[in-house]
Image (cartoon, rainbow, N blue to C red; front, top):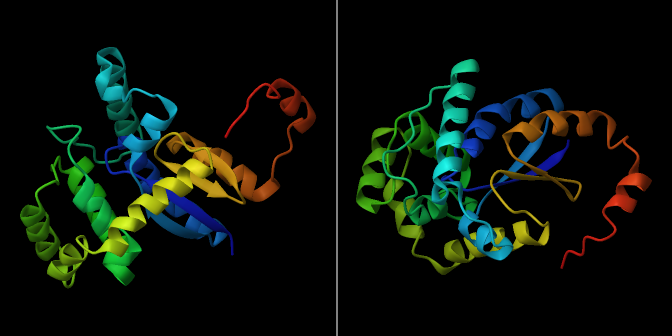
Length: 214
């Protein structure tokens, strides 16, 4: 069974698409995913990247790209009216430490609420009502755990791990210490799972010898 780390932040529509699409890897390759909520903003700060929402031309293009992609692939897409919003509570709730065996169900619900139904999930009481009305057991307990130290530390740990793999955005996948970024990298992930890397590795190393990553 192939293990894949899936680093994610709910502010990214491309990660929503990746969430929808990653199921085919689970089915085809019996892949076991480890879902790791992390702070995309911290990655942006570390790499001195401006979020797409802060660049008007890029925001316009990115949203149109997302609407086209969703339409072409029959994916329900209704972005939240307020973006970015504070994702801290839902990131904490989405950790294994907070949601336990319901983790995948909680994450799936958050993706649908935010990017398919246009919800802004930053108020803890409102989030709780959504958990309760959508069949998540012990929603109050999951919310309460967001204040526990180990849950807070989990987000920091996941973000630090993502940075250690040189991740710079969401979604970021790690297979055998190889980084794959973005929804469109799923096609390359499938190829990698079947064949590994078969391009000219020596030429690649020559052309990237000037890159010094800490």
